[in-house]
Amino acid sequence: MRTLGFLFLTALLLGSAAAKPLETLSGPLRAAAAREGMRVGVAIKDLTTGEELFLRGDESFRQASSIKIHILTELYRQHAAGRLDVHAKVPFTPESRAAGSGLLKHLGRDSVTMSLRDYAVLMIVLSDNSATNLLIDRVGMEAVNASLTAQGTPDIRLRRRMMDRAAMAQGQENVGTPRGFMRSLELLHRGEVVDAATSREILAILKLPRFGRPAIREPLPESVAVAHKGGSLSSGVRCDSAIIYLPGRPYVLCVMTEGRKDSAEGEEVIAAVSRRVYQHFSELQSP
Image (tube, rainbow, N blue to C red; front, top):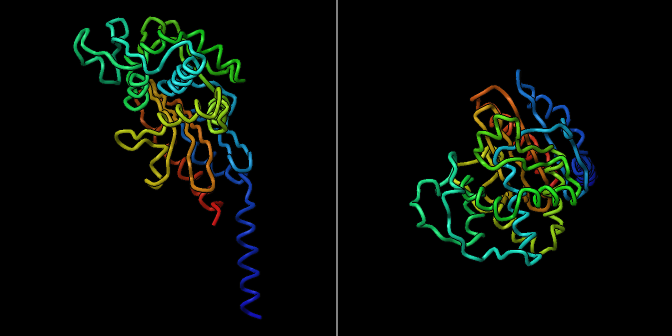
């Protein structure tokens, strides 16, 4: 009888853990995000149950390089529509060269030719600003924004090329909300960006490993795949949006921060939020 009672109690406790709602994270996330002089937005989606949780989910944040997710997506939308070929080889020209992150800015004049897909890999893996500008010019800024509106995320906007100082001085920033980025990643996960095959190609690039260890990955086991793109600005912006493929319990996590200039504190917040969310979902994993 004692054995039966113990098994019943264990099953009851496990059942309670499995049923723990996402809302229980609300307090811990607010605590993790509570930093003086910092604004933090979070969006979480349980891709198994459909549950969602937001902290400043509909507020707009500057996106830095996280906006590159949507340039990549538009590239593959146009490839699927036959408007361009991602495997077509294109020369890199001085007009696309940009300061900041990346490799292409260091290479010789008129010496590089590669496929649009290869430029996309540089854009995501190395956050190459020059590759990004070339792709923006190829797909068109208006086309990116039209697709974002059509998919139900008009709150995400590509307003300037990378490192366009004149546009930045005029307040033209690439922006988005935690809810909007969550929605975009959910569509990719469901295979609804054009079709399942196109979504898989986009995700394959977003899953490629990065140098170093991004803050959103910091608490995760190496074996867990992550499709994501982070971004940062010296003005205090740190953000990352990801699908985290926890076996049996995948979820979307988008964290966006704006704080003090030249502060990397946002990365600490992203890591802290990611750690707490991972703990929650790891307790819900199917046995």
